[in-house]
Length: 247
Length: 247
Image 1 (cartoon, rainbow over the protein chains, first blue to last red):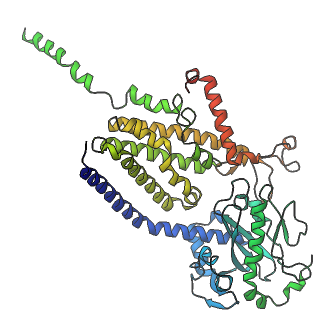
Image 2 (image 1 turned 60 degrees about the horizontal axis):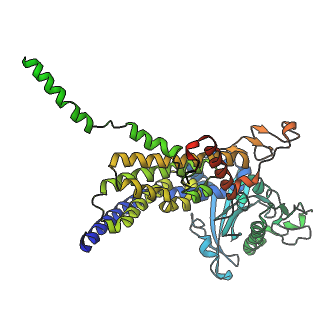
Image 3 (image 1 turned 180 degrees about the vertical axis):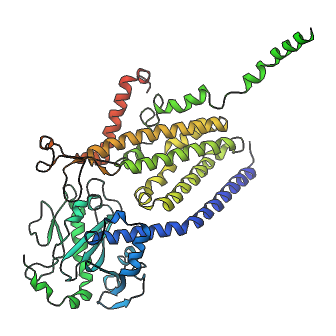
C-alpha cells in the first residue's frame, strides 16, 4: 500500500500542475473571450433595430458591429430621476443590469443607447425581469417620437426550450413588437402587453406564446416596469407627442 | 551447408518478434471503435449519458459541438489516465481521474468561449456537466486503468463517437420535426415575413396539399428526446439480435 505521504504529494503535484496550466490558458484566451462577449452583447442591442440596418444583422462582421457602436451610438448612464449621470463612451456597456436589479428601485442606474443612423434616431432601452425559471432580459428600441417601438430583442437564462425560450428563439415573437405604441389613445402609459390568447388591441398588444404564460407575463411585467424607469428622462424629450396616437 | 543453417536460424528467430509486435491499428483497435457505435453503444445499450442527451439535442449545431467536446474529453482523459495508471495511488484513483476530466472540460470551455461565444452561451452549463458524464468516468475505471495508453485512447475515442452519433441522430430528428430546420437552415414549415422555408407549407403562398403539416412543438421539449431515444433503442434491438436479453 502507498503511504499517506506519497498520496498527498501525488495529488498535490497533480493539482498544482493543473492549476498553473489552466490559469495560463485562461489568461491567454481572456482578451479574445472578452471581445467575443462584447460583440455578443452589442449584437443583441443592435438586434432591436435590425429592421433599420442596411443589411441583415448576421451579415455584419464583428468589427463592423464595433464600428457602429464607435461612430453612431451615444451611450448614457441615467439615474431614476431622469438625470444624465455620465455620457462617457462605453459607459452604458459597463452597467450590469443583473446587479442593478438587486438594488432598491430608487438607486438604480439605467443604460441608454442612442443610435443615430440614416433611418433616424433610435433610443434603445434595457429591461430585465423574471421568467418562469430564471431571469429574462431584453432591449427595446424606440423611434424618434419616443412613442413607437422600432423593435425588440429578448434573451433568457433558463426558460424551457420550445416554450418560454421562444421569446429568443422565435423571430416571429420579437418581430411583433415593431411599430407598437407604448401609449393608448387616451395618452395612458401601457408599454407593450403580451396577451395570452392573442392581442386584443393592435396598438399596444402582441400575441403570447401557447404553453408559456408565465414567461409571457414576465415579459409584460418587465416591459411595463423597466420602460417606465426611463420615463423620467424620456417624457420631457417627448413633449406631447403621445396625444397623436390613434388606436 | 552454412547457408542452410543461417536459413534455419532465421526461421526460428522470426516468429518471436511478430508475436510481440501488434499492428498499430489492428482487429482489436477496430473492435474498440466499432463496438460502441452499435453492439455496446453507451447511450442506447448501456443507457449512460442520458441527461445531456436530453438537454442539448433540440438543435443540431449545439449537439455537434457537444459531441466533439465529449470525444475530445473521452479520448484524452483515457490517454492520460492510462499513462498515469501505474502511478495513481489506488485509494485516490477516482479523485485523480476527476482532476484529469475536469481539466480537459475546462480546456474545452475556455476554448469554446474564445472560438464561438454564442454556442458557449447556449451550452455553458452542459459543457461543465461533461465532468459528471458517466460515460467518461466509466471508461476510465473499466478500461483505461487496466490497459495500455494507445488502446485506451482508441477506446475513449470510440465511446465518445458512440455517444456523439446518438446525440446527432436525435438532434436531426428533433430539429427537423420540431423547428422544421437543420443546422439553422429552414427546411419545412409555413413561411412568414421572418422565415422562408425551402418546403413552404403555407396554404396561400406554398404547396397547398401539404398545408396540413405543422412543426411539432413537442419535439423541441426535453421529453421528446426521451421518446426519440426510446424508439432508437427499439429500432436497434429489432435488427441487432445480439442485444436481446442483454440487460
